[in-house]
Image 1 (spheres, rainbow, N blue to C red):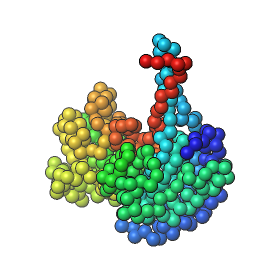
Image 2 (image 1 turned 30 degrees about the horizontal axis):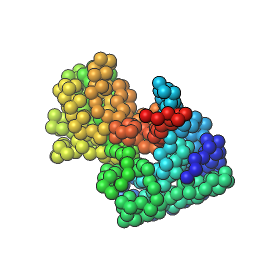
Image 3 (image 1 turned 120 degrees about the vertical axis):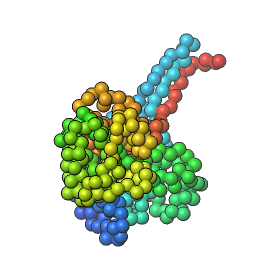
Image 4 (image 1 turned 60 degrees about the vertical axis):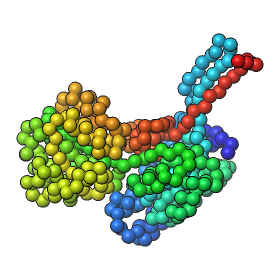
Length: 397
């Protein structure tokens, strides 16, 4: 498709923001139909499915922020003039067509669709059946925004496919697809990776860890852990595992205080054998639980004897998403952060900040746990590839 000017792309985004505001009540009412149809079997999915006034406000903010950001396409990254006079320039370029496959979250239809569109790409949206009515309502607004600005509706397309049809499309696309981004649970990601015939950026599992170092401020540790675990259990940046240094002064007192606070927050606490004497906890039955991302009011707490052991354990079990150390020892923190193989590493802060908006990107398409081509939150600036422009006057080699 012929590239759209930045002025046109911004105009579509601003129009879309106005339409979302105008249709606020209809979006929420339509979403309530999806919620009523959902069986409630997955607490995290139900939480992600819900659209309320706060969520609509976030959609509108995302669109307006995108419209105000600089064009990520055509940015010069490198230039070189050859001895023979040829001028070589490398610039950012749109991918072409991006397919986003996601579960439950209607706000992805806004945020991810907007990021892809602003970066000059055609978007194919494939949402889950549980949010179909909400997604179709939002896509109808995308089409209206495009038409009001003289742009073809083909730039934003919704694929209303079942699982079999999706598999067929992945294996034999009926149109050119340049990049696929699955955004959801491990089963969705494995499904896409197994059948896709073009590059895939994995927005993988969280299974995030906090390591409470021997020189930790325990009040700070308690605050960070409670926030990371309970603020939003459906988020991939939520906390699942805590490792406490056995050398922490008043180790037992801190563990007791932490476990009590988590239980008061209705979190199921599972502990290793070193902590099994605490009441109202369950003891680990299968070591495979260290690999699990819960997306639920559930946490695993274990004791660790050294920082090196903590690093090895986190690198073995975590999802490559986020990990934090709680310590006043900056040297220990730096060594931990440099050694952990994750997209985002923290000292004395909640893993809940691993988010495009919180990192100053103005939103995200997904949070990648891959190392190519972008790791962590994929913002507007990252949803581009590059292209070489070579200018000559008849030079030959």
